[in-house]
Length: 86
Figure 1: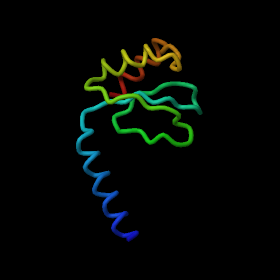
Figure 2: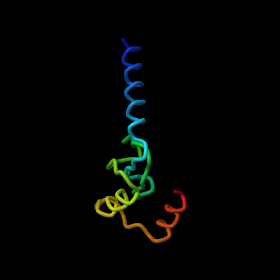
Figure 3: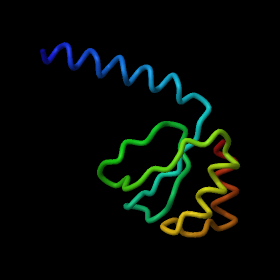
Figure 4: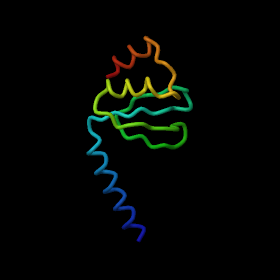
């Protein structure tokens, strides 16, 4: 029974990952006190305390991050570093 549950969870996870290509999420990181934009579906555990999305474009995710109260405002230096990483 455990093998069946494990196999089905792997199948579900792989199917979910293939659907997530090209999408963006906003995640809150408790350790840094910031909100990051990631390209994989976040697992809400430990330092990651919320996830919002998916969004179809980086611009949509940035707009959403600016409207979330828990997210501090992004400085111009952080925005440049984020753009250069992509």
